[in-house]
Image (cartoon, rainbow, N blue to C red):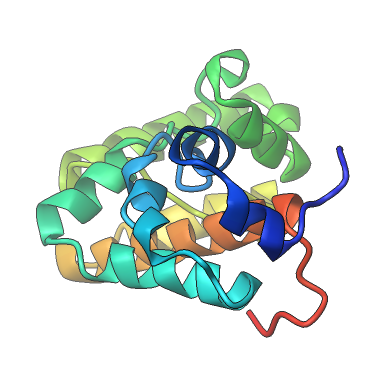
Length: 174
């Protein structure tokens, strides 16, 4: 991976470069970083991430659901994922699932989407394939509000890790 930029470099980006660089930290939802562009200059990595957290938290329910719908189903056509999602799912071992495990995950994905209207989202980098299989079964018992909250919290975890891949954060607390 290329070297990480510092927060000064982030603050000096023009709008197009800002969106090009950070547009997929929230999967397929560049509006989340577009919504915080005008808050520059950011005092720190944490200030930048916190601005995106606030932006997401302040969205209405339907826009939060849209963020979740922008995420791919786990174990579904790994080759068609964004590079970030492909790397994250591979690191979690999704690409090494047995045929039986893939069928189980696809079955649970279908049940999950039917119940909640959006795909199951989990921070793959903080889990492994076994934990993911347990989590989807467990979270199917949640109600819609609980699951919307759980999914968005995982979106934030994914975003934080993607941001740490791009920006130096030596003094970050997040």
